[in-house]
Image (tube, rainbow, N blue to C red; front, side, top):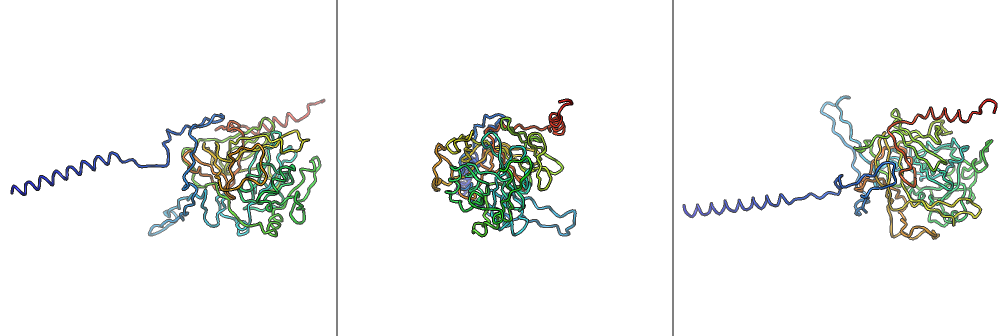
Length: 455
């Protein structure tokens, strides 16, 4: 009995010791997470150029590594009916992996086999002087970039894939910014011409064969660039292009491969905690303005330029988009890349590395950052860019910008069409929950333009 009691005492003490150790270990467990506490992220103030102190860190390689796409599945009940069949949960697409048949520009299915097979196509479209409006075909573009050119006015770079309008324009000249956009989207490049220094940079680029332009001898019959003169419109604003003919031209050259460009991430369900915003007003130093107003009936944003509805002459509807993205990007003047007789310098827009951004969708907006992935193994551009930032980013072809939070996670965009606005400061974009009265503004503009009696 004495021996048995001793054994029991030893066992009980051992168990007590093990329980104490386990309890002490439990108090030391910390679960690692890649998402920082929201209290540690300093939000930046809307409409001011001052920025957050918490910028996204360079993500680990896993951030840009494609992961398998999960297919939506759901199991119906034993007796399925129209009322009790579960609805599949929306599945996010991107920024790197997209299911077969999904357009990486929109997050939507390609409308047909032809659009899936052809290459992204970027067209430069004039937005100044006012006589060039309404332009044609913009509402059929998947993505439109608007950025500043010399003189404080803007120009459009419209990227087409899903639709193939036969009358797009007026087509205008290329700029330094296009050296970034064309490889990002692995696109064909359609424009009317460029200053000689910039034209040489285009021609010596690795994607020189992707250029379709009158500047390299492409004409109306073979490439779809045709003139449509109009009274009161200068000759340089009369060039339009048939994208069907342009894509055929690319096929004959052997450069019409349907590559994807990745970067945007889509989900039909908006991210939580969006801030209401119904009116976005962007002013480029009083020379030109853009206003986007959210239309709850359609879930789209409608465009006003210089305070009047901006229409598309091809479909006679107001310009619209499902997403509005505003990017804050540094601008540098490059007088060395423009003809001596020009009164304005070329603008170098430093679209590399990362910066601050807004994303608007479904009547709300999110504050975050844009990032353009880099590939340090790529060689410098064929023509040295004098005066450019030394640590410039050269991205792999097809690696477009990402819109992210400070924890490197994608801000989910609405599947559909996106308009990207490039500004010098986020403060250039004035955001409001209230709608500006555009009908009253339009009336005031008309009255101001009407001559008074006896004048």
